Image 1 (cartoon, rainbow, N blue to C red):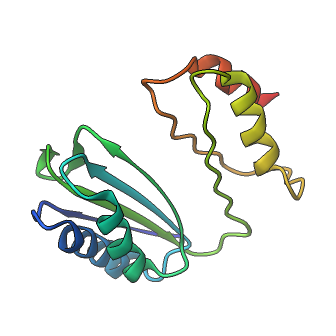
Image 2 (image 1 turned 60 degrees about the horizontal axis):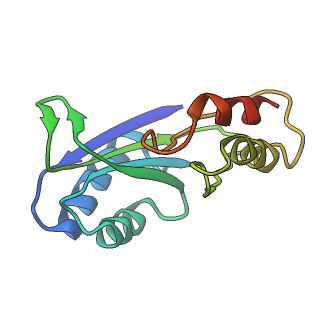
Amino acid sequence: MKAGVGFSEHENSRQAGRGAAEQAVALSGEPALTILFITDSYDAAQVLEAVRSVVGVSRLVGFCCGGVIAPQGVLRQGVGVCTLAGCFNVIRTTLETGLNAHPRAVGERVGRALLVEHPTDGLVMVLPDAFQGNLPEMLRGLYN
């Protein structure tokens, strides 16, 4: 597996997304999974479109955050991209809503979505909105 990371503080949403993605892909090669972090000062749709134009068919997950941790420190306005390339058997992503109202049910839906083909091992990354819902209960549902 090879990983790449890229960061941009460019003010233009498209240029920031494209620049960060190009840096990451230059280090990893063609990614199987892309993780995108943006601060709220950007147009998320434009950043996503620009990142997609670089990473192609890679699975993509991401979120808006209060700051992006970069080698130069915390970027209060920035885009961060992490790309992972290499030999992956299966990569699944899912998005669920309703965490605040039904945290356990959300966790159970995520678990079912990830187990579609009955995998026996693997890695699960959960990127919940920490300001919503009961996260321990959501994790109980996921493990259920």
